[in-house]
Image (cartoon, rainbow, N blue to C red; front, side, top):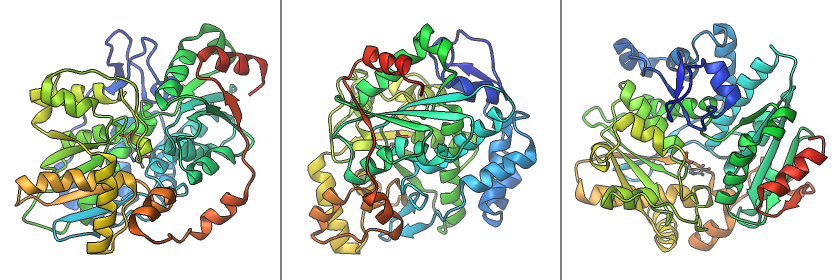
Length: 434
Ligand SMILES: *Cc1c(COP(=O)(O)O)cnc(C)c1O
């Protein structure tokens, strides 16, 4: 498999180079040259295969010969070595719980796959790699956990100070020795811009072999298609094909779902569930794509105003709002509705949603109101205990911290404050050996 840049100006690269580069030299996102045709038997057999076997067969064509089969199978098995259950919430809605990994959010899958792939590639070379990542909360934790014992790889994390939950902040600031965390006095968009500038800076590029671990990196993006297959493995309703509701920020997860659908996975429609950062819902309604400043909301991992993976959705579905709307509906859900949804779903069904899943639930409910025969799956992207402040207030009781979080909350935090400017980041990176 070869990858081209969606800006269209670069030579084709294999999976290894696409992973190591993160972004193409012309700043475009990498995209697979062809969407592999699915073996029709795989769809029928998928329910009878183990998660690891199915995942190996799905990802192999994307990785090609960049990783040997035995190593790829090991990497995949380690990546998904935790339960991913689908839990009925109502008669019409099920929740695919993607948060049973080490940092309690779905980004563990992409981050663990990428860290192991990079570890494999750096084992083949002399030079160490530096992963530079901007996070609105969960990416940084997943990347920090995924890379904390990977030799030959250093990690620099930027997060918007004060805009992540207490648990997220602990996960970001208590990492291993190969991980350096900057608390930026700005928004996630500021952090993302600083990272983008760093990638373009010749001096930094001479000093560091830089790569990104945001969902623009193919090694993080591609494994996310597996979630949708795991939902299908557990889908019992023979007569119906599911609608998938995806809490969306940078649109990497939902773009991976659309990729799975393009390969042949049965999905009726995708719902992009957004918070008040509604660039895509507005675009699909009005044809105007107008990103602004990211607004802080209760579902902070989705506080993105200019979703970087939207270009991949256009590559999959077409450029126009009409072409995209054939398969995708986008909703904007307010913080007030998010809180009401957490409260009412708990009262009616005793199911606890985190703020991101609550956005997906609310959007799916709105869709089901006008499509009474539809059946839906929402992607539960984070454990509610990651957002105790919001969830406890909504359900009116305390959450029990899982045992694995207790030692974390005791650890001292370590981070460096940074103003929201690329120059400040560059000075830090040039003056310190990171
Ligand atoms: C990152 C994240 C999202 C958004 O995923 P994208 O791929 O950026 O659209 C949703 N929910 C949670 C909990 C997240 O961490």
